[in-house]
View (cartoon, helix red, strand yellow):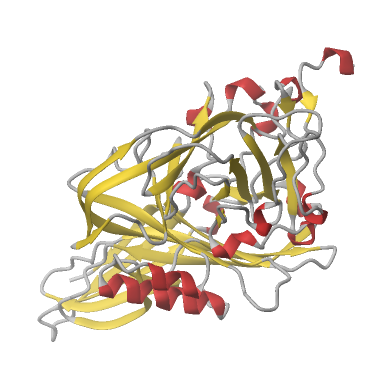
Length: 465
């Protein structure tokens, strides 16, 4: 059977227990990423020391070997409890790459890409199940070193239940890395040649800013821990305050002020890991250009059909990626009661929002449920785009949360009551926030996953004069 396979296993890599990467004899030594290097490691602080197998990390790909030097030189890890895919890549000394920062792009390729939700979590703060994402970009505040350095980025992967039935060449991931030269950029009124903090965008193409409409980028702020918020000086004060508050809530185990995040999951006692995605409109003027492309590679996705035919290497990790997804788009039932009696001049209008529990199911990756328990599942209604100034308001049974630059109202069954001359309810866009714990069966640290999905709405009206 093996004779029929076109690919080869990746070179072995004991990444936890080595100080230097495997290289051929008489080659220059390359320290592991967390050891730095001549140019230092250009990696976010919240991920650089989070690489241990006990916390769920598995090797997927590797090109470092004692028998050959591959270009590009990289290895890829995947966290089976948190659904995070991370690539570490090394740029050798001597190259000249003018840059102000570096951009990573993860793209879905293949004839089946439009049908897969794999990148929905990485690119969408509020997941619209009817619009699957095909690309996501991440801009990091690092210049390309000419003395040799490590770079890394990670993206959250959603579970695709159809992976095993999809031929490997019809659904693959493409990872691009480009240095960006930024000139005359103004972010929310602040002149900058750098982006401080990591920003995510759904725009595609080699230029991170190439798909900006009306000088606004819908940026997802990747918040790794509370200290990371100090770097986001280009944000408006009110937005930065909301981001700092959300981060503090998350560090305390409170789900408030954010709609997408991963909390915990590491055995470190000194730093609680927090990975939040908070979208906000970032005003941009100026120009940004791409001088060169450092890295581009297409990866086969573990557990796709006949994945072992991948050349030159097939993935070492052989289970499906992602933790969960939903079976269908959630439905929120909005019940409206409007009435008045002979003594009332105005209508008493009450609307209540409840999740139709039978409208969807949580579909968990069996590779996760075989090694971890899913506990403390919580479902909340999230009301978006609700007018903050409701005329005649008498009662609002909901929690107000500021998420980035927007206010949302949340609760198990949020309701609004008001007095109005006509029986017209308030309009809001419904969503459903899902929260649950992944508790490894081997005693590894638990993590909490938070995702919010856009919902359909069913309206039930009861009106009397």
